[in-house]
Length: 294
Image 1 (cartoon, rainbow, N blue to C red):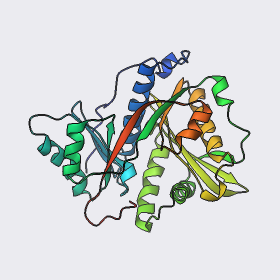
Image 2 (cartoon, one colour):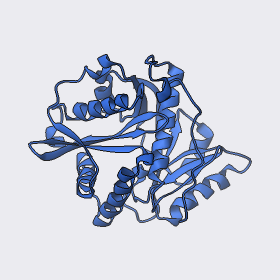
Image 3 (cartoon, rainbow, N blue to C red):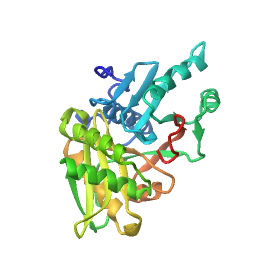
């Protein structure tokens, strides 16, 4: 696939930049910038491994991780010009050539783009995702209960494979062995490369893996992949995972953490002190023959 392109696809410096970590007031402008920038940077990092590819320019921004699951491949930007259908086709061809499903993220409502995405076979499942952020003050991290699970950052291959398995068991998704191997290879590369910004956390109760989270540290800090096994929900596992990642972000000098949540998960983050600043609409595209759960 050649070397990934490394042109930045992000906003410029904002008040939440870690070099301004003394400022802990979250303005709407800063929160929106942090949410957008972290999501773009985190996904571009997923595509910057030996099996991934990205395109990042002011007009087009997308990432293919090499993992054949829609949630690991994304389009963030496609500024429509005089021939918008051809532009959408051109983006989708990159994913079709690699047999990769994707999520096309739309912030707010963009009627013309959304109409064209539907016409090209992308599906919207009528569930908006809140974009949320929190200032990393001492008080905000003390709102969680005493942890009911031990949380550790994982870096070794077998532990990262367990992380991936636990994440998908949390969401009750079945994953093929081939996908397990591809995902494990990606996670190992990301974990070993400090420039990727990715950190992965596994929660255990009595030695048993029960939950996951991930933290991406770039220009902005973002919380991702928070999942808890159904059998241990409402026991503070997700809170423990979130707080550990937030503490690590604060220790690294960040003053704000952002995330994108499901509607159900938003209640957990509100209890931790996160506030909603925007909504995303997720359009999903899958090449022919790829099952829906991928």
